[in-house]
Image 1 (tube, rainbow, N blue to C red):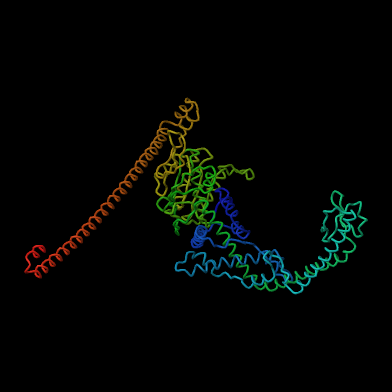
Image 2 (tube, one colour):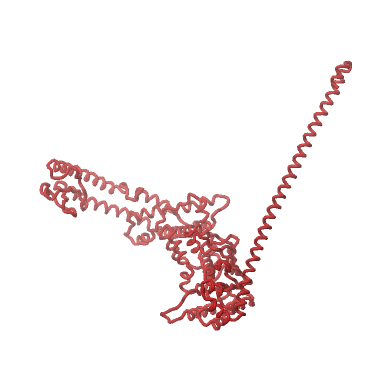
Amino acid sequence: MIYPHNFEQKIGFDKIRQHIENKCLSTLGIDRAKKMVFISDYDTIARKLHETEEFVHILQEEDEFPANYFFDVRPALKRIRVEGTFLDESELFDLRRSLETIKGIVYFFLNKETEENTPYPYLQKLAGDVTVFPQIIIKTDQILDKFGHIKDNASPDLQRIRREITATLSGISKSLNSILRIAQSEGVVDKDVTPTMRDGRLVIPVIPAYKRKIKGIVHDESASGKTVFIEPAEVVEANNRIRELESDERREIIRILTSFANELRPYTEEIFHSYEFLADIDFIRAKALFSIQINGLLPTFEDCQQIDWYHAIHPLLFLSFQKQQKQVVPLDITLDHKNKILLISGPNAGGKSVCLKTVGLLQYMLQCGLLIPVYENSRTGIFDSIFIDIGDEQSIENDLSTYSSHLTNMKFFVRNCDDRTILLIDEFGGGTEPQIGGAIAEALLDRFNKKNSFGVITTHYQNLKHFAEDTPGIINGAMLYDRHLMQPLFKLSIGNPGSSFAVEIARKIGLPEDVIADASSKVGSDYINMDKYLQDIVRDKRYWENKRQNVRLQEKRLEEITSHYENDIKAIEKQRKEILAEARKNAENILSEANARIENTIRSIKEAQAEKEKTKKIR
């Protein structure tokens, strides 16, 4: 369930839909994009997400996927259900080319199935029961040429008629050229004039003053009145014959097309099913293209209620900033069964609403089957309902103030929320007197929490921050602000409430110091000190987070150095062993050679026993 009716406009999904429609190749995909809706069935969402993810891989890794000729001929197919009707040449040509595309896509997936690992199981399953129609393609090729026109030999009668048209036109042309040469020699028409066509009849352009010099019928004159177009009497009969032949040709073409439609008619339901598949492919392809554009991917998707996102990016903000060569500050956010409701506080224009809209838009995109821009280690879940209360809902027609409209939404939320609902509420409790507004907001927050609903809620109210701090299931969060530069950091920090930095912002804007001092005294030192403590907590938390990050970096560096030295030691030890092994081998070789020489010497001495000089020499 989605609430309110203009939910998509509020979170910007209407613009996402438009991006996808613009990437479709035909009205087939556009119709699918227009009908894209929020789904709460886990298996259906998972299938759509996997289909889109697989198509991303196709776009990035495959060069031969058939992506031409996505034509929507369903209206024409509906029309020929009636006996005696037919597809015209252009419709038949679109049918032939799109059926060829369907066949190419199905065969693309069938060929992939022959491999050991099936790379696109979800898309292959989608293509598995789709019928292709090679016999219709062959039959169409017998009728149409490669440009989509009816062939001369589509039937014997058509071939005869066109031959006669050609012969008759040739005769007319010869007659006209003969008449034209005579007229040119007599100066009736200019030398550069050639026969032209008017109302389907070949005529000669003539200057009005000489129009009586050529016998025939005046068919037309130029807009300036300086030229009249005469059909010479000698070719009137032949031109009439051309008209008759053209009528015969048209009747024969209609007969051929009607005959083809009669053969096609029994298969129209199956063909419709194939075009539904082509529509799916067009739509999935458009979703995949958009995913690539926004760096969308499929994180871990589980059948439970959770949001555990790292580096989540608002896609519309990303596209806008990309044009400006700016970077979007990513969002890290966690909602689980321990902390279901996140209460975000912090300064105005600090990014609270963007954070809330990012959560709403990405969750809605996910449950419409779209990949989302988060890190791969993110974990996503599923909600049955998303309720949002954001922006100015003042209604002149119904005489409702902004606060009344807000309370109307809250009434709906309290009645309909449950543990499978996520609530997105901006400026909770605002729009009325702070004390009672804060009290009502606190009571509502308590009801939401008791109903185990999930939620992202923004507020400035101190009592809600205290309530969140003391209530299990609710956790504070703060949009960080740089006190020194006096500018928002647009970064969410979960665990502590945030300060509105009202005094600091007022001072930066240049509000007189005595006004600030007077305001501070009116709210009391407790409030000012508490706000200061919140700022100090956020500042200290940032300081220690930076310290912790530096320690992590140092530890990582130390691990890298240790690993490097360990690898070096292993390499040296390996090298030492190799050297020792080599030395041992060399020593064995030397010893073996020495032993051989000694044995040879002994043998030589024995052989030369009587010759002392020779024995001495051998020794």
